[in-house]
Figure 1 (spheres, rainbow, N blue to C red):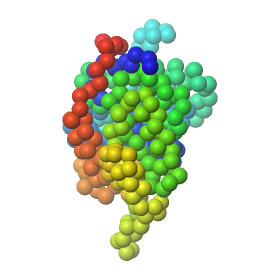
Figure 2 (figure 1 turned 60 degrees about the vertical axis):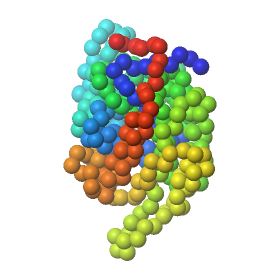
Figure 3 (figure 1 turned 180 degrees about the horizontal axis):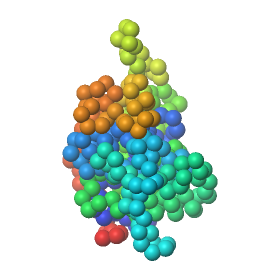
Figure 4 (figure 1 turned 60 degrees about the horizontal axis):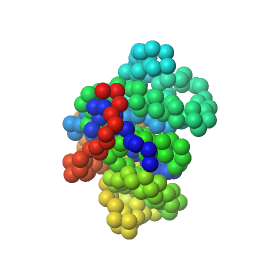
Amino acid sequence: MRQRTKISGVKHIIAVSSAKGGVGKSTLSVNLALALKNLGKTTCLMDADISGPSMPTMMSVKREQVEVYGSAGNERFIPAANYGVKVMSMGLIVPPDEAVALRGPMVNKYLRALLFQTDWGDDTDILLLDMPPGTHDIHLTIAQEIAMTGAVIVTTPQQIALIDARRGLEMFSHVSIPILGVVQNMAYFVCDKCQERHHLFDDGGAFKMCEELKLRFLGDVPFVKGIQTETDRGRPPALAGNEELPSAKPYYDVARKVIAVLDSISPPKEPKVVFE
């Protein structure tokens, strides 16, 4: 195990991971970041999906907002910001229509630059890392090199998603990173006509997995049309003032549980600190 590095000024670094694509992890990351910020936590968000960045669209930020300073080869970034949350993404470095085709070593190089060469601020409570699908180079780089508080696992209720979620849980366990809890996304759909819950992807699979593995269950996020439409428009439902909306309330419920977990533990202590 390599010596893990703490990012100066950041109290808690949390990976939001699924080990599977298509379960709504990035949407949850964005709305969780906004909910945490609106509940009083200074929150930053980093898009760790180098080849498929989605944060610029979801957070309505643009390349022009990122400031670069320093000498060639030792550049520093002042991240973009919107809705009170600082955001950094590969999508803010390359043009939006340009494919990011990189081999593994270069992916890790860019990942380190986004993490360690970005000015996150001197008093950041939480830095959320929106992880890409899988359990490959990026996950291992972050898990082995970053002093992290823990990971939030996102899954949907059906077995095929839970299988991959367990793989992600196992990976974090192997590198001694705590699991802060599990969120069950797309948990159910409430019909407009009958007002009944319909479980499109099975019923409570993530909750059952948490019981079996003795993990914290952080809550359900249902199918709500506003989640998709508003996040795609760059105005996620968890914006300030929307807390009681059906599309926003689940994220605030999850955020409060995450805060409670963080209040019960101490930030990771590592001897090596960069960019003081």
